[in-house]
Amino acid sequence: MAPLFFDHLVIKTQIIEIITRKSEEENQKGKALQLVDDIIYEGIIEHILQKLNPRHHDNFLSQVHDRPYDPELLSYLKENIGPDIENEIRLAAEKMIKKVLKDLS
Image (cartoon, rainbow, N blue to C red; front, side, top):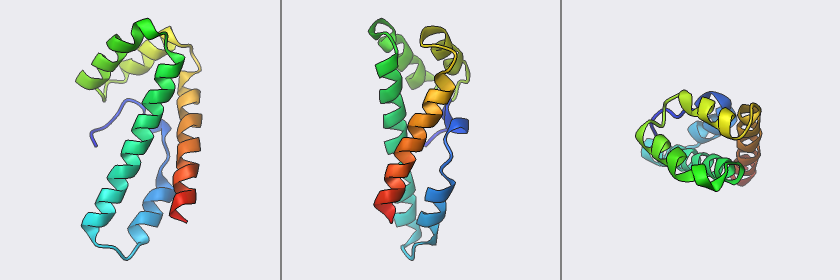
């Protein structure tokens, strides 16, 4: 997956270690890592949309589609949700990572 504006808030080290230590073929490991990225991405976007006023959804989703890497998206969210959105994203990601880790064990 391409770099995302919230990547620096998501720590997937444990998941990556578990998947890369498996005795599966490399392409299977890659698919598993991609699936984890997709799960986290979808969960964070869903969390953001729940917090964001619906009138901003189309604009936000268009910006994410056009420039998923742009750090200005966090500025947009801070203006339209609140200054603590980075911490909220971090906490949402931690919850999803815990679920994934539980499923992997």
